Length: 457
Length: 172
Image (cartoon, rainbow over all chains, first blue to last red; front, side, top):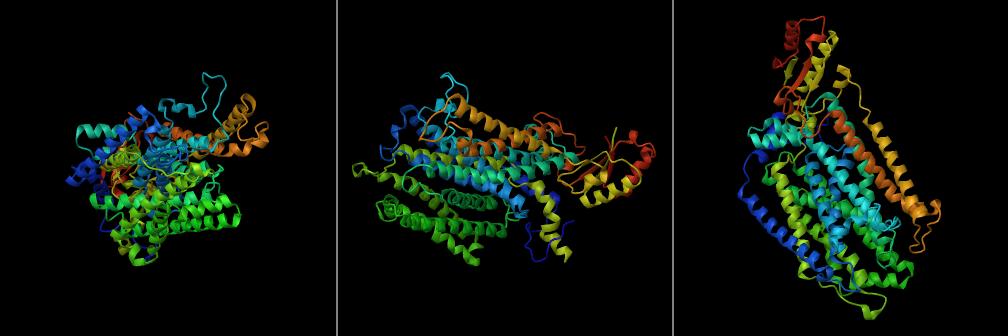
């Protein structure tokens, strides 16, 4: 058996055995929800309904109901799209990249992070869909034989690359997540005492029996999917950034975008994981599994990716000056000091300055502080996309076109609505799915469990 | 009729399986709540070839994507967009790389997943075969088929299983 050094922190705290892990993880599924859950669910559901109403209003009246104008023809919709896709990046990063690096702490957080990924990508995909105006023609983005003769979609366009990237990312993440869930559903199925839950979990568990060959295939497919998903994570947000970078708008036309967007995506994704899991560990009593150490590890990722984003912001400014192109120079000067200076300042403060406090060990080990910072990062990363998109567009080449962007209630409603739908989905998930990869966790109990570590030494 | 030895520790099961195999008893199957590393070598289960299948699905995707895009963009309906070269594959190929990569991953991942579900026979509506409900919780089971084991009687097998540290031996 694998032995682990004494000085490594245990990943599972308390006196746990295999059965106790099953009990702890299955408890929220089998018990009843508390008042706090109902309260959170009601708030999320109201927001979701408002958002759905605004979406239907948009579809009914056309996107003229948004605050777009001829100068700023891309604003909150694409900001929200990029924000949600970015959030969706942590899940696959945690499960795929950390699996390849054999980071065992991923096991406590990968399931929820992947669930978050899937829900976030669903929210992201909504925005290009409704932005088309005529959503019932959304299938035109795919290269399918059609009634117009041999008219195909434009494979030279990054927008089409994005269609492929997002659909691949969503479907592969979903499959990866579900393959991991099957053995855990089998555990829930075999424990269920009531008839209806048992039959539902039996269907969800796909008849998993835990045979040797099944486990061999499970481990092999997890590894290969991780290997495939790792470059996928990087490619998806690189392609999202190319939606901007391949254009000729000053402020967008920069080669730094792909790495800068990927770092930003991981940064915001981890922040959202932090927001959700710090709450969830408390609500469903999983403090022994999602420990202070896990939170610290995630904070380290946040401070590193945050610093990368910070360097990207500064390089952008430098390169704009160094390029000698006056349009570029103006675009960046205007971002920082123009009418949208407050958005730029919020972005800089939330994304670069505040996360730097995580270099202090005491702060990055503080759970409440980590939660607050994660909210700041979420806000900061939304502003980052807003700054890139709106400030680059609002000063057109012709000064008579200069304008500001004012969101309408529909813009705000749809954004709040997606947060609501996301909340509804996540809260339902937390009540019905095993929120930790409980069977995978059992494999590290003997090497990284607190009680076993004590026995060894 | 199959004979099952139930254990409450994976280490004990591994030792037990080794003992049984050394006596020439074929261990038909092991059921466990999580993967037990090395058990396949002990009971003689071959490693999976699903990764090879994944590679084949992947290169199918690569080929389809490259052929598809060169047909759509160069043969069938060449469009001049932003002055980008579209009359020769070699000049247009850089723009095809992202989708080629995505489509390779798409085919490899979904092809592998389908193969995985079919070869494991884990599909919606399939009935689970694990002998005891706790083999998905904290128990581990060894499955023997007494008819296939000529040298030992069923009683011998039961007592041998008990000696390896089972918590329960049962027939099903």
